Length: 354
Image (cartoon, rainbow, N blue to C red; front, side):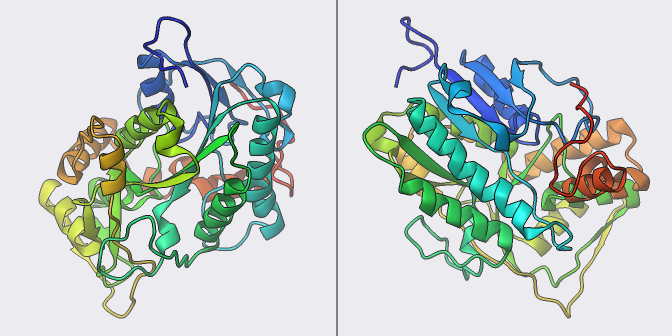
């Protein structure tokens, strides 16, 4: 792989889901690193921006399920972020979720291989560890997913691994629980939701006893990790799994809530002692650091909470904003279906405004 700073060529990268929470940060990081970046996104979340205007890049504005090998001929690498979010209510048709999160992912990889796209970064999740106990888990520890979303990520990893050969290098990046500011902010993520609730309502409400562990990482640090993996020599990353996590950033939910209440004035928190939260896992991120010793994670949880606090104070966040579908992905999709903008197969009935 040719690094972007090389004088001979610039790597051309396709980012699926580039208008999402992670994607809208990642494309900025990649462009600043002088990659030639193109997006692919049907933009289910148009109009859900927070704050600053998103950076514009060339893009394919169609459904991932419609990709063809010919669309990929000009690319050196693909970063695959696009996926439907976890839906705890179970209102989405499981067959449709599988078609998008699993079947379309495998088909995309097969098209990449046919088009001679040699590097494929798959956004997996540390939630595949599920009930992991109290010891930090490394990449060789057996997964134990407790949700359909985590199980689908694990299934994709296994299927993609079968495609690996000397012409095609898949890399599996298990993201820790992400937080932090993004042009496409989400408030259905733990840290972001806690801070938003503290700002808008003056309280952080835990629906469990808060004793479960989570591994947490800032969205910009995820983007930097992906950029590092993108042009690594094949022998370092070929068909390998990496926890995109900081070993020193494993926290119990109750401790995260306490940190938020300490950093947001006049805020209280409550817990439900009768409910134990699952999944619960701690993650070891040392493999990524050993493989990429120059990779620097710049954010810690207290600094990230301050970033969110300051941005949300500045936007005058309200309780209505917190509850709305603007910043909640599964709720937004349900609204689009109710309004007839998406059909039962989660395809648009009218073009997106881009």
